[in-house]
Amino acid sequence: MESYEIPVLAVKGLRKQYGDGCSYCSGPKKEGLERNFCPQCGTVYACQDISFEVYEGEILGVVGESGSGKSTMMSCLYFDQEATDGEVYISGYEEGKSNILRQSRQQRRYIKNHLMGIVYQNPEKGLKMDFSAIGNIAEKLIAAGHRNVSAMETRGKALLQHVNIPLFRIKDIPRNFSGGMQQRVQIAKALSNNPPILLLDEVTTGLDLSVQANVLDLIKGLQRELGISIVVVSHDLAVIRMLADRTIVMLNGKVVEEGLTDQILEDPQHPYTQQLVHSLL
Amino acid sequence: MVIEGLSKSFSLHNLAINISAIENISMSVKKGEFIGITGRSGSGKSTIIKCINRTYLPQDGKIRYNSSRFGWIDIAEADEREMIYLRRREIGYVSQFLSIMPRTTARELVQQASIEMGYEKQQAAMAAEKLLRHFELEPRLWDSYPNTFSGGEKLRLNIARAMVKRPRLLLLDEPTASLDDASKVRVRELIQQLKEEGTTMLGIFHDIDFMQGLCDRKYNMQAGSFI
Image (cartoon, rainbow over all chains, first blue to last red; front, side, top):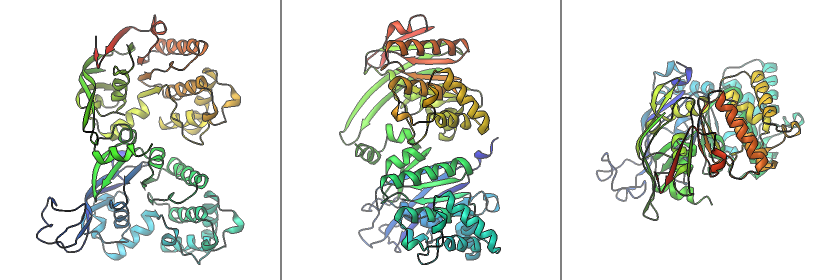
């Protein structure tokens, strides 16, 4: 069998709630919730039983309105927030047999630094704005255990050139860069440790069309050339159509539909997905 | 491929209506056959083709397809991963519209399809050039973006992209609808040639004359059923 039969990333029953819950809302069905919010105790169920798999070289699209739990899911996967419950397996970590959410802090840092990269919508979250562009990349490389300065410099230059940052600007600080450039530095940083998994959270939102095109071409190229598995969160259906093979649709913290991207867009089943697709034109 | 009792309806939740597109369709396609489907617009021709490509999710019925990798598989219920594999390697789909990737040249488009099949870059580049030449696309167009092409050029590129994979099953959704007569003749020659090479094809055509002599068998549709 070919290698893509084993998922690179498998998420099972991921849950994240803000608040302790009460007898009214902690039942398994969560019927009394208003959207994802318990009217009795104020607990927010941001992610409820999210499960999906991503295979080698595949791009999985995640769509949903704001507040549907997309970013919460991403930050739980990258350990920015602690998931309340659930299991996540990565094929690159202990052959996909250990739930990475239950690892020690040290092990999680290892996973973050060696096996994953993330690009946030807001570059300020992913970059140190007052470190030079190349310094930002070195930071991630050092975290991943590199120590040879000249090797890191060569790698940093190559990465920044790959994302079209001109060489004469690599010592500048990202604060002085345009939004598109910041985003591309973030992508270079996320890629610096050759991660098998890349998480992209609304990377093109807020960029103008030509810059957006640049970033999208870059992502597509990465998937083709490096075979990275990518999770793309976006509320822009055009981005999803262009990038993703498969797509999941989220609403109020749950996955309401999943399927082939063209099927989701041309023959949506769930009322919310239909509304979303029909809003497009 | 055998289709048994295929039905598809679209339920639009916000309008609370249910539109039935095809009902209880059964047909079979043998290896190497060319099957034509005719019928007025709105009779459900494209729905069948799109169900086979799984762009539409069928409600009821089976689409049993004999895959070289999976053996007999029901497309209506196949796993998404299996479907992606089939689309990449075994099933080609050509519509009258070219679904273009923005900022991708004609050459890259065909080449990429070949790379998906698992060919090396260089082999893929050669295969792409050969097909572009074969489909008489002018070399000056090879490295430009397809959104500047004429309708006929786009269509030929579209077929080239599907053909570079040498699919076991080729689905043609009105590929000649917007073409002038000269282009139609060319597409017809291509189909003839594919048929001689043993490709199994299922096609929708408005133009009955066009199908004459090409099709092994013909189905005529009306209001979602064969007549």
